[in-house]
Length: 368
Length: 257
View (cartoon, rainbow over the protein chains, first blue to last red):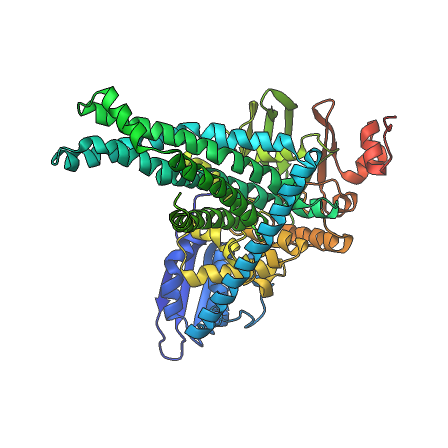
């Protein structure tokens, strides 16, 4: 049965006769979309809607007729049994106003106060969680049989081994770019061999660790949050709790331990490939290997290497911990998991930078 | 106005379906007639939900075809496929309402995607659909604020947004209490009788089957096919198939020692 377009014909009021709106054709979604505006404009109290020529009417047509009859006060004529049955469930005037009441916007002090309370609550939760996780990790070290080592090694593989390519590529290119960009200006003064010092110190003390931690926050912190968050939404975390199994011990400890193990290892790896990238550029600019090697050995001390690795342990704990915490904080619904993942990455990166700044001060004070 | 004629609305022809290399059902053929309530039965794991997912075109069958109002859903692409999908509505086992949208917005979504109706018309239609399932006062709520039964009803309202010829329901009464489940049966019957919608329902709730089904087919895991077809009360009283009798009389099978 081919669809016939809906048509509207408005016959204006004449002596003694009310205005008639004659609808014809198919009152389906396509037809109603055409005639909705003109019909609504013409319909008014006392206007007659003639439906004799309507071939077919579906719920879009029913909505139009309901609107004309109840909303505009028009009168329907020649209503077929089919149309009447469509309109039957809807009594007169019970469609409530469309627009939901607008809630008044909060005043600025209230909004600031609410935000402050929320942030304080979040900090309190982070502190509580830090305590719980520390206790759980230490308990795990004292009672190694209670740790889920299988889960831990799996996480070491996904968060560590599988990240080798990306961490290596970013480290190598960063070393190269840094060396290249600094060689050009330093060449003007004839001291471009000091690019070796620049690249080696920057990688070892700062960039190697920070880059690794940021990659880890993006790859694994988000994955931890998504995994635990989905378990939370599916009530798997509740199931653990009611079985008397501490979710922190069961879910968080393996991931946290894995993050603490892989971050320093990946940092050492990033340092090595980053410095290699830098040295390669220096050699391409014509410096022999012996000169480059001597410069490197003279520039770098054990304390520089240690400074980077010590920070990496803390970065690992941060990325793993915040990922798991955001997962456990997940509320219900599919969008909640996405929200937790985002928060895991954002607060992970933010905390990495804050902790790095703190370490800069501490290392300066203790002259490391 | 119920008119279950002989005119088939869905035709499954020699349908072989499964996952990967595993065949779940082999060479299944059946018709669903226009205006009837058709129920797919069977024990757990016999492929009821899998069959439903193939009927609505979520997965391509291994062989055979599914005709919806005479058009081959399996082979259809692009605009033709969209046009067929517009004529069917599906309510999934969990409701599958979009959690970030209110109930009314969930019902409006197909209207926004498929029609060019003005905003107020869609708003009114969403309200009318929700009114049909008795949820008009909850239209501004999020799915998470509704009970399980209300979510199922909202999902049915969404499935019916575009006045589809067929509505598929996957285990509509799973997880509902008997009263809510009976309410849902009454709703299905009312929509079938007043709007004339054809329903294809997957369920194993006996009371629901007796309450709504015009015709049932029963699937069997071992034989990978249909073992019985017909009126449920008739099958209960006269079927010679042992599994069909056990199913309708709720008799336990042999419990593995």
